[in-house]
Image (cartoon, rainbow, N blue to C red; front, side):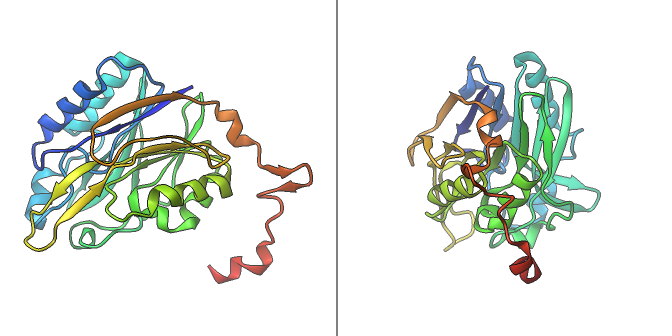
Length: 265
């Protein structure tokens, strides 16, 4: 199975340009599954709720989702991408999954970061896992990495690959995702952005790049640079994520002593 990411620098507010540029950057690369950054089509640093309202889209009827459904059918590729989603009078920081068969599902970010809390409602539907035939994929977004329960729930629900659209500004995530993969024996594809936004005076955001693909054994199969747009596709075997044995006698899930810690969460 070929999985990959697009690392790019969006132009804030120019949705059609960002979508068209994403397809241009991906060119004719061949992949079964591609992951794009969080809020890739709008940019990240909203300055008002009115901006969110103007740029958010319905799913699956909005421009961005429809454009990716068209490309998914043409390329025979599954895409995960982050957008601002409009649901009646509420807005969510969402990750959308589409494929050759059309719209598949959406995840609404549960752990909102910093000023996201001013514009978005937290997701209420949990962490979803979808079977796309070649593999089972789970969705989480950006700072969800900081909560180990997110990746653990996706793994327990059967995810082989965690798709992780991000707009990372903290330095710790790329290394932390190595641990998330190791402790859950899953692949992870983190798609981050690059560049800088300072649309609110005194609140500059510098995005760290370092998009990556990590194996169930915690090996960084590829990590992108901090300051360059890039597309990367690698071959993986999803079956590797279904072997949860540490030794012939130890299984990372069966050996859990839930009676000692589940009451605390």
